[in-house]
Image (tube, rainbow, N blue to C red; front, side):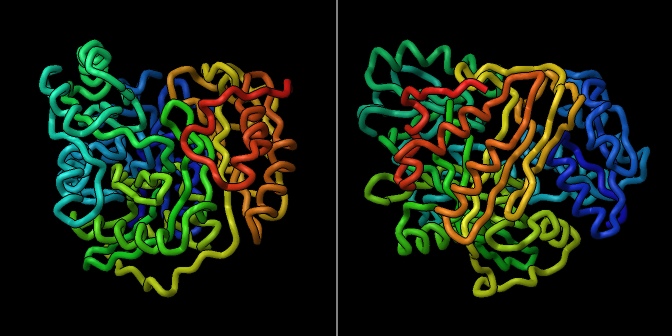
Amino acid sequence: MQKLLIANRGEIARRIIRTCRERGIRTVAVHSEADKGLPFVREADEAVLIGPPPVARSYLNADAILKAAADTGADAVHPGYGLLSENADFARKVKEAGLTFVGPAPEVIARMGDKVTARRTMEEAGVPVVPGTEDLRDPEEAVREAVKIGWPVMMKASAGGGGIGMQVLRGEEELKKAFPSAQGRAKAYFGDDTLFMERFIESPRHVEVQVFADHRGKTVHLFERECSVQRRNQKVVEESPSPSIRPGTRESLCKAAVRAAKAVGYTGAGTVEFLVDPEENFYFLEMNTRLQVEHPVTEMVTGLDLVALQLDVAEGKDLALDQDQIRMTGHALEYRVYAEDPERFLPSPGTLEAFSPPEGEGIRVDAGVEAGSQVAPYYDPMIAKCIVHADSREQALARSRKALAAFEVSGIKSNLPLLINILDQPEFIRGRYDTTLLTKPLQFDKR
């Protein structure tokens, strides 16, 4: 691999550039007109404008991205996360162009991207799944299936992801009323109006396992991440190790994740996500066939560079690590810093008048912006990730409080008050929280 095109933007593009620079790999950034002033464009060895601000005309324009690769002589493509990272057609086009795709095979992406197919695959592999349905296209059929599953149910788009379109339904009339609008949202967001349902697990925890596999089938796990601090089904804070699951549950989760990866012939970095109920029964939720936003917490506790491992596997190298060589040291938490109103969760685009991340021992900030950057309204509002590591969870929480208090953002609103508030919640301090934590009223300090 000599030159890598990064089919993404912001902080993840900068993150990939950093590892490529260490390995002597040249990088190509692609960018929209709105992002031309962001740091990742300047830091790459080359940069190519691929279109106007809307993602459909720039970062989701596969043809423009592939033309940029051809024009610059790139021999590989890294999709980052989001955008085209789990688009099987894009991965296929990259390979057909004679380029290396840093990710699993297109067939695996497609198989795990269809939630119903993924469920069926996991069942066959002996991985526990939440009781649920196959594809649904009719509200009457949905009601019959819901009665079999047991109320309440969670309705989802079969081609969906990122928490978009998920809806909890607690009765027949509610389901019938919601079905047509859910189909419309699924069609609008994912181009497929197929729905399915699962039993809704009350007060679950969301725990995921990082896996890696090479082309010879060697598969290892890099332990788990607790991702239960969520708002609107999207993650806000992640940590590793999980502060609440028992050692036996951790071992079972990690073994199940490896079994899941092997069942689909996985290669590269992947994440197997589970719901864990109050009794610590766990159920397969989905498999993300890419690098996760929260991969830095795993890097902090294992000491491994996950992007470097991705590049190794993409180049056809064998995984050099055996499972017993991978160990966790200390505790890490990641806080997603969003350009948004922390009370109403509305985006807050504009000019960053000040942006001063914290520094110090055990603190890492992956940012897509700098002071003076324009935060555009067209993209996900996450502008940075603050990752904190220490010898123990108690020390990591203390370090987190200092880091977030020192994080300066002005010119736009940010969710820093929310993140600071989370650190004061008794359930979070005890490590005994679930996905309902942010559904409760919180008070905010004005800053």
